[in-house]
Picture 1 (tube, rainbow, N blue to C red):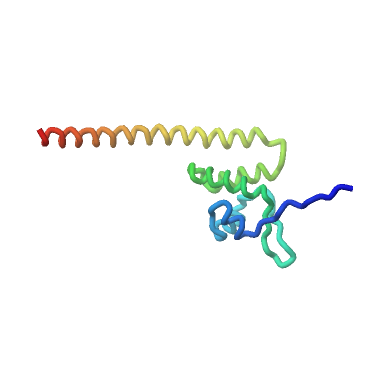
Picture 2 (cartoon, helix red, strand yellow):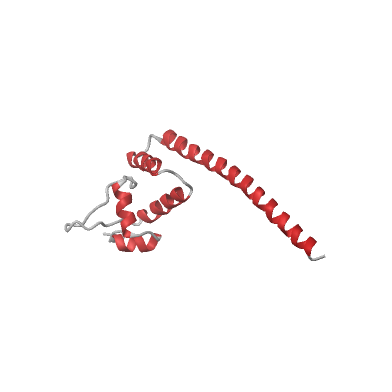
Length: 131
């Protein structure tokens, strides 16, 4: 007979500390449907998260930082929660977001060029004044 060990469950405070989000944010994410599965609760109603929630929240954080709208994050979460068989929809969602990022990066690079040109202009002016 082999002993099995249960995966450690995390409280909302422990999970928040682990991923660098507030407990308020985690509750809001849950209310917005950003978890692919319902959050298990203890008999007293306290949320308990499995270790997989850490990776999931880190992914959500990257998506949010990259500008993905919450509605798209919820759509992705729903697709993941439905399980296998919808990979084409997941790919389409991620490819569309990747394309939006590429376009934003191109815009930002053009903005940086303008700023760099201004810095170069002012440096030349300063150099001319010191001669």
